[in-house]
Length: 225
Picture 1 (cartoon, rainbow, N blue to C red):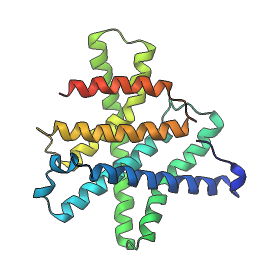
Picture 2: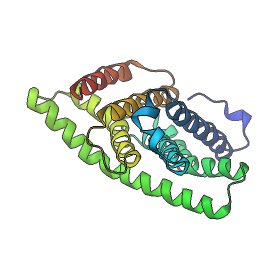
Picture 3: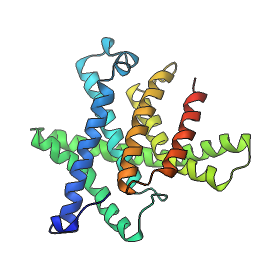
Picture 4: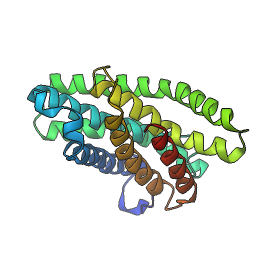
């Protein structure tokens, strides 16, 4: 992600500005999926109350926010060591930026506290689930052939988006995920597009490793059919 530091008085100010842009992008990505003509029938919207539909939208927003946070701390992110210190600060700023956005819309303080707790809860959950996702992916790949460095690199790169997609799908369905594979695949595709967009911006446009990862992702989606 290229940005002229002279535009800002401090790195904190730059992090705040960037976090606000990322939070806005997360909300936009969530809204795009929420309004998708395939997503709504797959999520059984015609049978859901407005409150339940709102809950699903909130889960989609939080999934995108947490995905950003996991990308920012990804060990395989291709950025300089000096830039990582900035990304660590940016990571902490993303939830606050979204809460500030909600505050600007008139959301009351008690609801903002609930949002803050839920974002933290989902972050802890999805970050923890990365280990199981990585282990499962390595088991599947190694059962077909020996793992080389390229295989391990692709697995590592896909772990954040897979962990978030699995968790988000679980919460959208309130744990009742049997027979909801098409909904999962649509959610995974949407989060994957957003994931690639964020990584490309952070890595300054270097897309080759992500291209290989998307090929691996397509194989995963085919196996779900």
